[in-house]
Image (cartoon, rainbow, N blue to C red; front, side, top):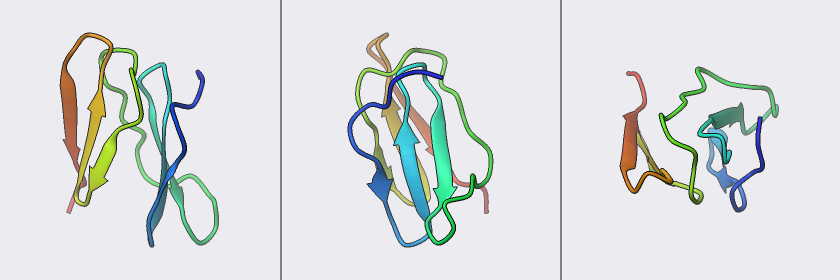
Length: 72
């Protein structure tokens, strides 16, 4: 689905990976299994994003910053 941008972001609940094609992948930190929905932002990624739960931010090659909020 595209090259990985930088290293993964690791937290107590998730491992998050940003891909160049705009996908954001979430994995369960304990099992490594895919977890939840995988949002796709409308632009190719320019670099890895930032996470401050419940928010995930991802920069696009279109010069915009995309923000997502984890569902309650």
